[in-house]
Each structure stands twice: as C-alpha cells, then as structure tokens.
Image 1 (cartoon, chains in turn orange, purple):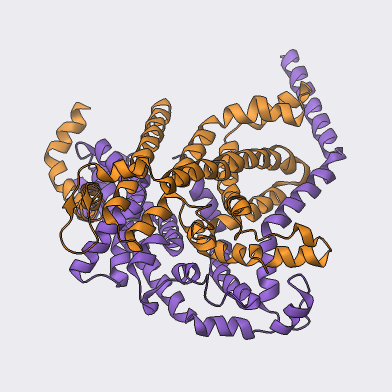
Image 2 (cartoon, rainbow over the protein chains, first blue to last red; image 1 turned 90 degrees about the horizontal axis):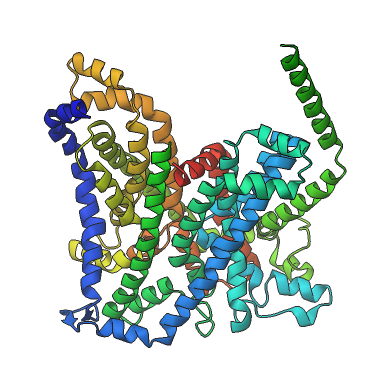
Length: 302
Length: 295
C-alpha cells in the first residue's frame, strides 16, 4: 500500500490527464443537465423566456395529480411484468436447461434454447412494439385468428380498451425480459459444481427440490443483481409504452417516463415535468446505491 | 488405500447408474415438448412477421395472418423501404452506433487506464459517481440536453447523439475495464517503464494489445445499445433525414398502420439487422450480458 501510494505520487498526475476527456463529458452531459433539471423543478417555465421560481409548487401539485399517482401505480404493476414474472420464469428455465436438458439432450440443445429465448431481448424495443402492435390491434393477428376459429366473443380491443391494455403491454414486456434473466442465471449456474447435483440426485432429491435447495440459494447473487437491475429498468420504462399505447387509453398504461416526456414536449410544462423526473431519479438512485453496495460487498468477498 | 479405491469405484458406479437412469427418464420428451412450445411462443411473433412481410396484400385479406404465402411478394417490403427511406435510416444507425462504440471505448479506456493502472486517488468515488450518473432515468437530463443542443447549434445533428451516448455508455465501460485493468500484471508495466516507455506508449503498445478482446466485446455492446436507444434520438433527431432505425420504428405507429402487410414488413425490416448481429455476436452477447450483471 505504502509502496503503491509512493509510486503513484509522482505518476498519478500524468495518469489523471487520461481522466480529462471522460470528466469533461460527464460534467457536460450528465452532471450539469442533472443539476439544471433539479433547478428547473422549482420553476414554472414554458421552455422560452426566463424560468419563474415557484418554490415547491410543482412538487405540491404532484401530490394531488391523479395522472402522476396513476403512473406510479402502473410502475408497481410493471415491476411484476418486468421483474417478478421474468425472474421466476428465467429461474425455472435456467435450472431446467442446465440441470436437466443438458444431461438429457446435451450442451448443444441447451444452448440452442437459451439463444432462442434470448432473441427478443436484443430487438430494439420500438421494433418489438411495432411487431406486437400489429398482433394486438383490433384488426390484428390475435383477433383475426380468434374469429377464424369461431371465438368471436373472445376478440377484444387489446390495446385500445382500458381493461386489457395494461395486461397486453405487460405480456410484451415479459416476452422481452425473460431472455435477460435466463442468460444471467445460466452464466451463474456454470460456476456451480455439478457434483452437488449428482450428490443430491443420489440422495433421491427430485428436480424441484434440487431447484429449491441448490439452485436458488447458490444463484442468490445473480438473482439479487437481476432483481435490482430490472427494478431500475421498470422505473424508467418508456419505449414500449410510447410505441404500443402512448400511455392510453384513458391513461391506463401511463408511466412516469411517458408523463415526463408528455409534459416536457407536449404541454411545455417544463418545471412540472422536471419535478416528476426528480422524483423518479431519487427512487432510481436509492435502488442504484443498494446495487452498488451489494457489488462492492461481493468484490470484498472474493 | 483399498478403501479409497473402493469408495472411488462405488461413486463411479453410482454416477453411471444416475447417468443411465437420467438417460432413460421417460419424462424427458414431455419436458422437451414443453420447452419447444415455450420457444415456439417466444419466436412466433418473429415467424409471423416473416410470413406476412412476404405476402401479397390480397392474399392476407383472404387467408389472414396464418396462411402460408403461395408466392413470395416483396411489394410491401419495397413500399415500406421507400416510404420510410429505410436505407437512409440504416446508414444513420450504422454511423451513429459505430461512432459511439469507437468514441465510447476510447473514453472508457482512458478513464480505466487512469483508474485501474494509474490508481488515481479517489478512483472508487469516481467510479461510483459515473455509475450513479448513468443509472438515473434519461428523462432527468433530456430537457437540459435538448436546450443545450439548441443553444450550441447541435440540435438535430447526429453529432449530438454521438457525444451523448459515447459519454453515457463510457460509464459502464470505465467500470468494466477498470476491474480488468486493476489486475493487469505489474511486471509487464514495470518492464515497459524500465525500457523508458511513456504512459502514452505503454497504453497503446502494451495495454491495448492485451485488452483487445475485451475492447471488442465492449464495442459490440455499445454498438447494439446505441442501435436500440429511443428517447434521446427521438428528441434530438427531429428531421427525417437524421433519424435512426429505432426512432423510425417508434414513429411508425399511426402512419401506414391501416395496411397489415405493410406493418409486418416494417417489423420484419426492423428485425433483420438485429438477427444479423445476433448470429454474428451471439456468444459475445450472452457472455457479456452476464459479465455486465455480475462483474
């Protein structure tokens, strides 16, 4: 430690030159805009002229804004479709592919399934939106098919009816997210000693009890990371909503990100939009801090 | 000795028994069938898009989305391609994504060199600040960025998007590369220093060649992430000529939406580049995702 700090005392100045481009970029693109947004949240501003300071008025208005609370409530529901369901499906699939399919059918089959389930994850979300919008719209694939097989009364306006829109969008999000969970879990499983499974199997443990007693406890670090990263992503979800429903119908799929975008660029209530973004940022940072703490604990363990 | 041979022998025998039992498990076909069904559900939208993108509109009107096209009709694909000026959008996406991956990797490399090799004081704090900075929602920086871009004349230029994403993504790159560089063998660095190499030369002739595979992975990631980005390009690139594939797709809703075959073609054209990347970089991507999530 002493040696390295001595060495760095003469060398660190020239090394710190390498931080300059990154630091300038960060200050200009992240730090200043972030602070500016915070400052804007205490003003009333139409985007032209000078912002007028209004203190906490925007935040006050937030408390009684049904649209805002509705969007926060939808975020909770999207946490289910972005975190809870994909993590559960991802765990089951990963354990199945790793602990069963690989033994039964070989490595190649297991990798093939992993790749297939992963594909929706790397599609641009807007493309996924076009694709599913086409499937879910009133004259879309689902309704045409339902009518063709005589189930006319099951056909719904999936994305245009407030009753079904949230579920329809959730389905798309689950479809997108499962691959991410699966891939991380399978990578985590590859560091688990297969003899553990053999021993458990010799003791007569069936596949389910192996999942509960071996896979889930040993995958705890990956599960934690995936849960946190998907929670953070759920707070920020924007593109699927923009493309599939634009927050509608009747605000049924409105989320904070879309509300912010709407107020920034449509109603031009910049200060109010900034306040929503600040709330969202605060929640995200809280989650991110937990995430970073966890990662440094993991590093300390190694 | 005898005991260990024996126990070793029985373990092996038992293991083979387990393996044999596993091989003969009659459930395996049921499990495989379920997995195939699930995979079919996952991939069905892709298949549907392909099936209908190459269908004649008249045929869709008669046979619906599930009928197998009797002949390959590329009219709708051509139409969407022309209407959306898809070649232009592809070129824009490629230019922006490539520029971001090169610039982003360069910034990440410089930062990580200072942090991982130079052990610049406070590097832990710098890393945390970088990471927190990019974890926050883009909504919280979009309006000031929009305003700054307008003030500086960079609004509606691809350069604005390139700079923004190079900086945002370099935070992750810095994080990844500094963990790699902090374990870089000291002897090599010291040997280079003894030979009178400057920091600059050491970076390019010693560190970069060793890091090349990691840098390539990082570049691939930046490329695909940038390709898929939506909000910032949506706000910054308003004119049709500057838009990316992702933005063009996001704005397709409402336009052309009355023609289902045209919609399928739009989706199909959006999917193709992704599938190409996927086939080329599948291993890199799946490994990298995991590396990114858990160090």
